[in-house]
Image (cartoon, rainbow, N blue to C red; front, side):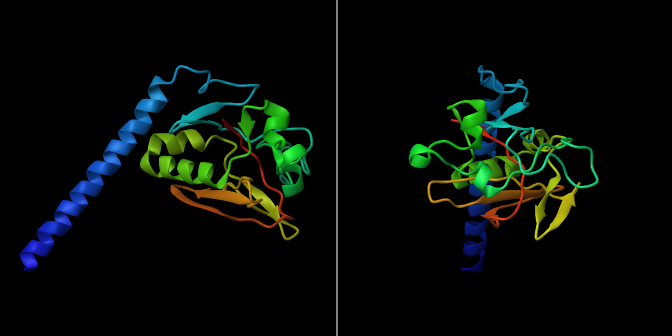
Length: 194
């Protein structure tokens, strides 16, 4: 009986490994065969394909920001920082956000499901993690009247239909989030193409 359970566990582990490898190679194939402009600079921002979504891999430098830089660092060196009010969906039907207003209607502030899909793509591939972790990634945030996380953590605003403020944090090779952020925080923004 014990041998039977061990065999079942080994089979299950093998099945999970095969599934992960299949998903990983599918993501890599999608990235390498995409013939759109993703992967080149779009409106001055570097982009890359993660799964089947095109993301900015530079933090935004849109003019309607709360701060143009992290205290004590070169202004704009890792993008600008935005309040939730500046980044959030606004306008008629809340269908316009900071991304669509600045990059065009095909771009949007990432939803919680966009962040989750990105997180899984990053967990499956070190190459994708390196693409996401451009120079501007570890830009920290402003929270509770303090600047924190420079060179250690990356946080970005996200939005969804229900107004959930999602962030994803990255330190070295660990990825966390999305999780709820305070409306008073100042975070960078990265946009995703519809």
